[in-house]
Amino acid sequence: MKFYSTNHTSPSVGLREAVMNGLAPDGGLYLPERIPVIPQAFFKNISEMSIRDIAYVIADLILGEDIDASEIRQIVNGTFTFDIPLVGIDKNIYSLELFHGPTMAFKDVGARFLARVISHYSSLAPARKVKVVVATSGDSGGAVAAGFKDVPGVEVYILYPSGQLSRMQRAQLDVPGGSVHAIEVLGTFDDCQRMAKQAFADETLRKDFLITSANSINICRLLPQMFYFFYAYASLMGRDEDGAGDVVFAVPSGNLGNLTAGLLAWRMGLPVKRFVVSNNTNDVTVNYLLTGRFTPRRSVRTIACAMDVGNPSNISRILDIFGGDFGPVQRLVKGYSYSDEEIAGSIARTYSADSYLLDPHSASALAALREDLQPGEKGIFLATAHPAKFPKVIYDATGVELRQPQLGDPSHKPMSHPRISVSYEALKKILIQ
Ligand SMILES: *Cc1c(COP(=O)(O)O)cnc(C)c1O
Image 1 (cartoon, rainbow, N blue to C red):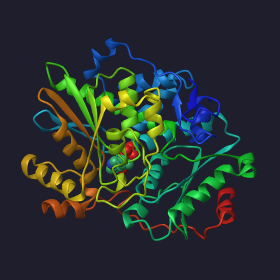
Image 2 (cartoon, helix red, strand yellow):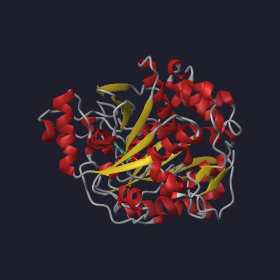
Image 3 (cartoon, rainbow, N blue to C red):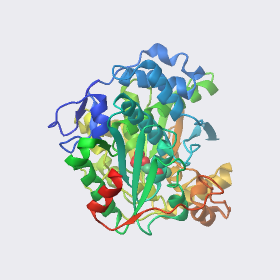
Image 4 (cartoon, rainbow, N blue to C red):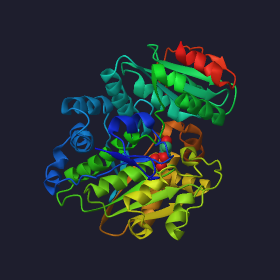
C-alpha cells in the first residue's frame, strides 16, 4: 500500500516511510491511497470475533502488502492486552469503554500499535538504531512511554516542560528497563516540540540513527483506532437479536483522530448511519460543520482539557476522505458544543439517572448523543478516559470521591531525569550517548 500526503506535493511513500516520517515532507498528513472495502459477508459473523481477530482482518487489508501476516498478528495481539467493553447505559445508548489500557485512555491503543510497527521496522534494519523523540505537555508522554515499554530495539526520548506535569503524569514517564528516557526541559512545551523537530531534521544524527517522532498524526496511531469502531458494532450485534440496526457513533473531539478513524471505518464498509461530534467551548470543528468554514483560533482551557484544541490537525484528512467535498461531510457528521457547566451537568445527570460515572470528555459525547439520537436508532459514544483520572471534576459534579489511580508501579520512587536548558546541543548530547 502506498500512502499519499494530504498536501499532494510530496510523493507517495510505502508504509515504512510513512511511519518513520510521521508528517509528510510537504507538511501534509498521510492517508492510504486506496481504502479497501470489506466484503459484507464479514459482518455476518463479526459478533463472534474478538477485538484481536477483528483488528487482524482490518490491519491485514491495509498493511498486508508491507508486513507479513504472522507479524501483523503479533502487533495486534501485543496492542490489545485489555478489553474494550460496550456497556449499556440507558435505553439504546451504549458506552464504548476505551480506558482499560495502561494509562486509562484511548490513546493507549494508537501508542501501543505504533510502537510495535516501529519495532518491527527496527528489527529489519538492526544496524541503524531507532530513536523516537517526542514532546509532551501531559498525557501523551505517558501513553507513548507505556506503549514502548515492552518493545525491543527502540530507544524513546520524551521531552517535557519543567514544572508543567502533574505528579501522576511525571510518574508515568518512569519506565523500568532503560529504553524510555524522560528529559526535563527548562522551557515551555513549544520549546520541547521545537527541539524534537530539530532532532528529526538533523542530518548528522540521521546518518547514524533512524529518528522518528511517534506523534499523534502518525498514520499508525490513526489506523488502529478504526478497529474499535468495528468491535463496537460487533458487540452491539452480539447483544441484540435484531442485529445492530441503525447505529450512530458519538465522538468527543479535539484533534479529530477518532472521528477520522471512524470515517475510514465507514469508508471500509462499516454500516454507520451518522457520526456526532462533541466539542467543548473550543468549537472550531462544530462551527466548521455548521458553516463549511474552517477558522482555527487559540484554544482556551476547559474541564475536558484533552479537547482544548484550536486547530484540529486531522481536518485535512477528513476533507480528503470525502474527496475534498464538504457536502457529504455535513450530511454524515453532526456537531454539538458544550460549556464546562453543561459538561458537568451531563456527568451529574448520568450519575443520578443511570448510576454511571463519566469523565468530562465522554460526558460531552453522551450529551451530544442524547440531543441527536432519533427514535429507533442506537447510539454508541466513545468513553475516551477513565473518570478516576479527573477526581476533582467528578467530585464537584456528583459528590463522589474517587481515588486517583496509581498508574505505573505503586512502590515506585521517582527516577531522576536529566534536566537541560532550551538548547538543541544539550539534547543532541543525550541522543548520541
Ligand atoms: C485526546 C483525547 C480526546 C480527543 O481525541 P481526538 O482524537 O484528538 O479528537 C478526547 N478525550 C480524551 C480523554 C483524550 O485524551
